[in-house]
Length: 303
Length: 152
Image (cartoon, rainbow over all chains, first blue to last red; front, side, top):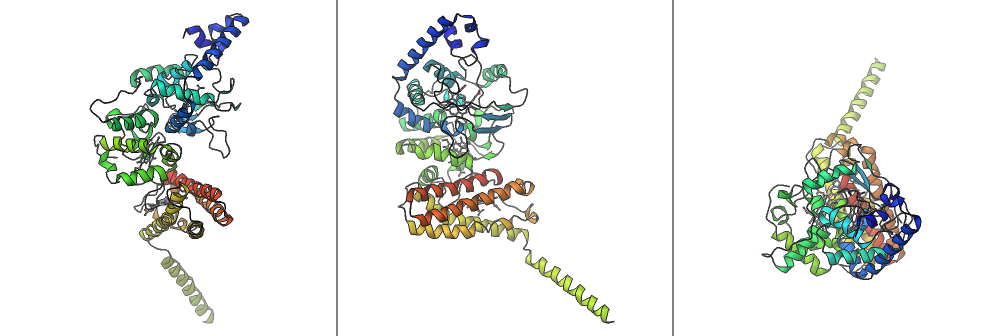
């Protein structure tokens, strides 16, 4: 895709060279783009995409927490040490949502953390994990998002500290901490463990909470899934065998489907929501694979 | 003389009252144990309902109605155990319990409201509505644990 078409789909066309193109030309370009997007949408499998969206927990961050809120129409407040982010509307509404995006725009957002207008996306959107999603799965996800009813709900501006609100600064952050690229299976691991690794690292983005972060909000990879302070500053448990061995496979499976422990203890809502939206929706074989992967992690002491 | 006796008697009553108040106020460690016991019992009667809501256990309307009734009483019990005197006692309660008492109280009232809804639903005979109400209770348990408890 060329730079011109990228900017033509951007949310702020006035600030781009495309603004100087004659109107008719722009309209033609747009029509071409929409046709291309439509053709691309037919390629992905929307039904499979719906399952992947559950495995990715998209609905949680992209739906207001108010009762009766429209799914995927945005509004959820995500508190971080850098300020409050609001999950945007990702329904296909052309103004309020991402209706004017092409599939390539979507892939670039998920894989590279870049908006169609070229601006960086904030890693509060877990693209550092989603970058690992396979091309095929991205295509299915996109096909599913296109089937959502468009909502005109306008996305709310993030409420960030002055310094952090500046998107170009993220270029430095990404250069330091972000490695784009599809998931690479571990040749030494079984197919099941690799499937679990993919579900955990790419879609489930479990590390976004279960991996401790440095002061710039970047996960400390040497302590992957070893617990510590979560994005909201609260302590999150260690998922490596050093800590999780206290639970049997059956107990883990029940916890991740029911949202309560065997003795009726209810986890903090941060995890309760992950269970409701994601792990309880996984196919039995996928949940089993996820657990097999957690079991295969190198034990890291501490929480 | 008489007046003095009356005064002494009144003072004694006043001190006596004070003494009995002091006796009624359990030690911080005991208060912690009691509130944890109330939480444990909530878990005991909530857990099976969560399994039914997820279809992991067969739905049993009689058990739901009974447990909902137990939860209605239990959902009033833990809170006076979070007395300021327990601030430094060893427990899983986060300091925020004692610094943002209004928010903590709100979270306890959210639970009570959700349990009232569950009791009503469990009497209504609508399985889907009852399961939804069970989910509603779970969210209020977890919502409070999110802010106010560090599970060790």
